[in-house]
Amino acid sequence: MKTIILIDMDAFFASVEQQSNPALRGRPVAVIGAGKRTVVTTASYEARARGVKTGMNLYEAKKICPELVVVVGNNDKYTHTCTKLKELYLKYTPDVEIYSVDEAFLDVTGSAHLFGGPLEIGRKIKKEIKRLFGINATVGMGPNRLIAKLAADLSKPDGLRWIKREEVAEVLEDLPPEQLWGIGKRMAEHLRSLGICTCGELARTPVGVLRSRFGIVGEHLKRMAQGLDDSPVAADDKETEDVKSIGHSMTLPEDVYRIPEIKAYLLLLSDRVCFRARQYGYAGKTVTLIVRYRSFETFSVRKKLNSPTNDTHRVFGAICELLDGLRLREPVRLLGVSIGSLLRQSGQLALFPEQDRRRRLLETLDRINLRYGLRSIVWAATLEPKRQPGVISPAWRPEGVHRSL
Amino acid sequence: MTEIDEPVVVVATFYQGRIRPVKFKWKGRLIHVKKVTYHWIQKDGLKEIHFFSVTDGKTLYSLAYDTDTISWHLQAVETEGV
Image (cartoon, rainbow over all chains, first blue to last red):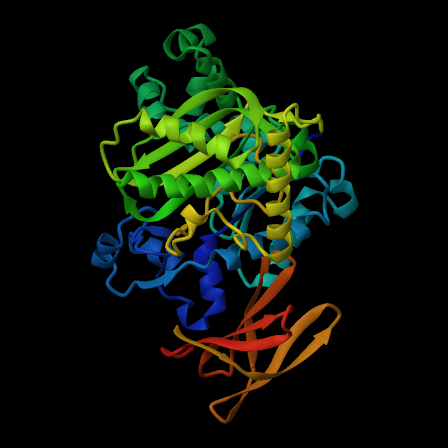
């Protein structure tokens, strides 16, 4: 019987900081990004108890919790911990998907019997995390990713819960739909307007009614309310077969509205995306620009290229065309670049000498950066030191490429 | 944390692939590491820098070991106490 485990680190960044500095333990702590960012990235449970939430402005957070200790986050510390956590998970199964820097799915269907069952694996992992890093994790288990996530959400913090297949209907019966992973508050409001207030009611609603109201999503909603989810755990060795896009986003150290400065960040992001694509042997035929305003309003625009590429300047050129076609209404908080419609590079020789020269130049730059460190050799336009990411992307993972942005 | 960024002499153990600072000299004072509260590695190309948050029971220090130059630095000191 299929068994999926979700390991969710409790208040990850704040817990790591409290572990690093014993003076912070038991105190309300807020982790913020570097630069001029004043938004709470993670709040410790002590801070949460006083009303401090992720995404809250620091001024607001200090107002409701004057004793709040503010710590500037250290991305290296968190990414190293995540890499080490992955090594730990791989002791129990090869099917590990690092979903985000603080969440991982494990498919233990084929290995659970070797370790005394899923619950025993969950216990051991929690114990090991505490021993190695001194921090707590919540472990949720279920017959699929959706239910494993729910089990973790229902038992946070420092929880351990297994929702078995035969218990799913009972657990979901009175559960508000928004507690399910993937159903937001707005969708829950739509459902309530139809008189659907629980997953049980949603599961019993005829699929035709849901389809007429929500389109194809309606069918998916019903399946979710029934606790059904076929999505596989995308382990690193599997995911590359099925990779859809390669992207990189960055919360800027401060909101930016000047186009030249925005373009400098976009060159940096295009370079990172293309570097990754080249390392994994992919080239993309679509280019996407993601923009988030100061107000958190987020949108994306896309462009199709006439041939697949992983050349930084071709991608950057297309991104600039997309940007030039926009009329920015607010200062920009976050930028993202991704390439999609990916193709494996076949190693076909370039038709024109100039293309071949260009390919060799990029290969040389990559080799230098891999040997001496990223940003050892960079495009001059990205040189300003303040162009460092302030906040780690939630989609960060130790290696590999995401199936989608 | 108050930034220091000074080279320091550190006595450390290197055993079974693990590094553990034991004591170090700073401002003419010998500081005995009572506990390593956190350890992480920053990778940059083939170079690795090991960071250690350590305490002598009173103060929190941040030490860095560069595997490329085989040198130790005292990065920062927590002035608020531990």
